[in-house]
Amino acid sequence: MKKKKGLKILISVIAVLLALIFIAWNFILPKVDTLGFRYVAVNAGTSFLKAQTSDEVDALLKKTDGFIKGVCHPNENYQQIGEANIEWVRFDISHLPYDENGELTEGYLSFKERAKGYADNGFKVMAITPYPDDYIEAGLDPRDEANKEEIQKIAKFYATDLQGIVSAFQITNEMGIEHFTLPLTLEEAAYFMGIQCEAMQDVKEEIIVGYNLAGTTLYETCRLMKPYHDYCDYVALDLYLGCFENVFKDIWVFDALLRYVWSYSGKPVILNEFGYMGYGDVKTEEQKNDILKTYGYENEEAARKDIMGLINNLPKDFKEHMLSLEYANEKELANKLFDTELANHLYRELQGGYQLTDYRHTPEDQGKFFTDLFKRLYNLDFLCGAIVYCYSDSDACYICGQPDCPVETGWGLVDLNGNPKPAYYAVKDAFANK
Ligand SMILES: [Zn+2]
Image (tube, rainbow, N blue to C red; front, side):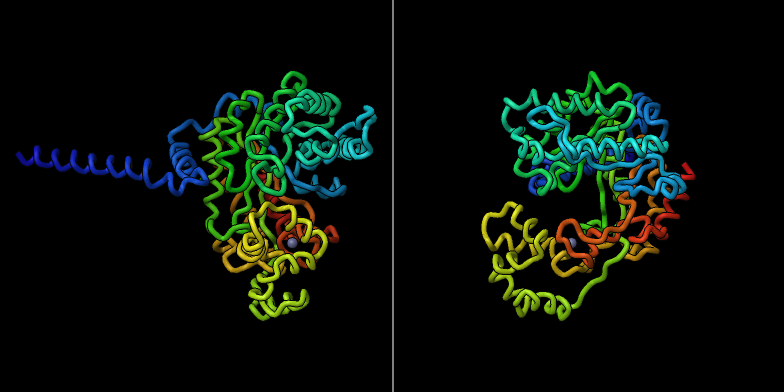
């Protein structure tokens, strides 16, 4: 009798749980699902139940001679780079290969020369193909079906002409991040990437080809790219937790999101960009107002009221960046500047919360971040490589152009004079252990 009662209770509990899951899945989660949240959570969770590697992973690692130990934006100090156990370098092609007369462009030739320099010194090169904008400027708008053939011809040219020099292609960069993607929609961007992966398929030989996910659209981008996954050797993730957002505070979110990409895509995964800002403090309201005063405003409230005036007074690069963003009205533009991480550029600071728990934005903690994270990454068998962002500190922020903006200047393993920072030694040790 007692047994039966227990069974009844158990069945009721299970029924209630199933009902709650059903309600949450169908009625609650869709309301918060603008980021594909439920798919990220479910795929990250179910990844634990799936095999942690595949024949495709093994095949890729064979082509790459093992785990990709890479760095973004290297300088020309081959010896110092090599001494950090770095085997791969990753940088942009930036230019279409030839002009309308079929003449090779200077920009492409200088990329090729540079890439050859690394290849000759024993490094493998991952090349990033140009942005949608570069094609539009050359009269090859990817949104026009008539340009498909020419865009595919260019992709084929890269994969053919760079044999023996380049070992991997990443097709364009971070589609979904507004300032890289516009004026394309995400659907158009996926098509733009997909047709290039397809074009390279027959000519790439041992070169690996894939694309990178980034930002809050990573679920959408991956979903839209699925029809092209047969042409991709890998799917990459770019991830900068604790730097551009103040939501995720824990280093394990790296594992969770990588697991999600593995589970959802089923493709070998590479961490194509990741790192940690090496400096950046919180500023007081007084310090911020002092900055606004240099533009002629007493405080934020006054600046918001004259947002176009403020933007027109910003440093040239920053102004151009702001005007390149999509916005419905001036109020929305003001919100973008003051309420998102763009405020960090305006105030040359890192607002409170823009850091991982236990890792401050200092050179020492930047090193600690790499030491701790690599230990976690090495537990993921489906992960085929990790490419550190980046090799050297920068003398000016590429978004706002200001030399003292911490957002895009302090990411390097070496400082502006080429001297190793703690992060250099942390990465060197981590790569030695793989
Ligand atoms: Zn900046």
